[in-house]
Length: 74
Ligand SMILES: [Zn+2]
Image (cartoon, rainbow, N blue to C red; front, side, top):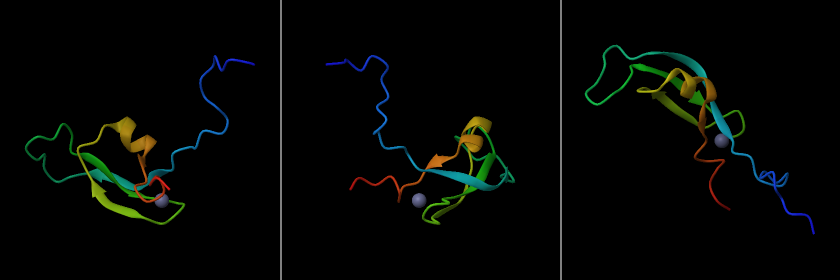
């Protein structure tokens, strides 16, 4: 028996990420926002689109966000 010391199992399901089809800034910073930066995210797998989302960090825009359709359980 080999203990899995290094974590990640190869069978672990990868999260499907939506990537920014476009990115930009909101015209104004809204109350409670940290940034006016955002993007228009689309899923290349199912085609789901979020519309424009703002209040995001550069790293979040680059990395994308998990697709709510493709990452549903079951
Ligand atoms: Zn999707």
